[in-house]
Length: 113
Image (tube, rainbow, N blue to C red; front, top):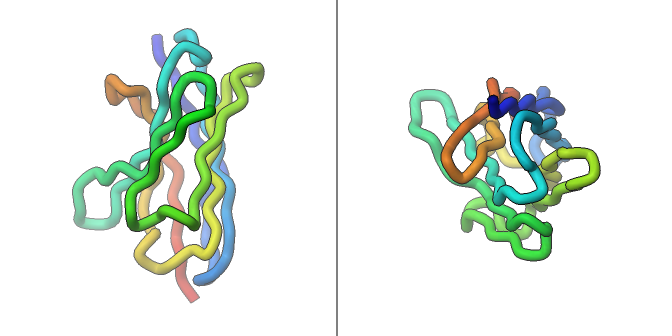
């Protein structure tokens, strides 16, 4: 059974940083492309970033490119999202997900002064 557990969210001021983590189990993490998606209040799911199995290829939504960095540690079965220069519009529940859209419970990120 795929299990994904996100952590690292919280309340941060605009311009601040957070690092999200996602602990994966129940599948072969190192063989799986992974992604981060988010859902802002009252809105649908939005793709944020993806990373290939080895971590050497990444892609980002235009809204976060240059501010967010996705990475992974296959030895630790963990996915990361480093978020810098956060904006109020980044407020959302962030989920890590497999390409087949299995998701964890999410972690809340709130950007507010």
